[in-house]
Length: 61
Image 1 (tube, one colour):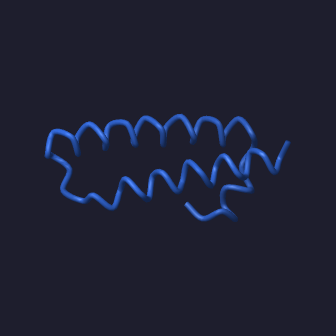
Image 2 (image 1 turned 90 degrees about the vertical axis):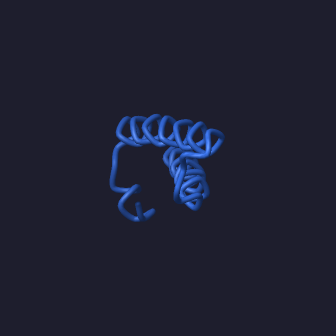
């Protein structure tokens, strides 16, 4: 998701999105460890999204 779209969301929506992305990242890590992950670039994309959300949450505070 683009940062401009994230900035339009409320703090609670960003926190919910953060939890969702963290869950997806954890699942992707497990799949990678088991050798079931076909697209390994998803790990870096999810980590970047979590970092973006953290940055925007800090901007709003």
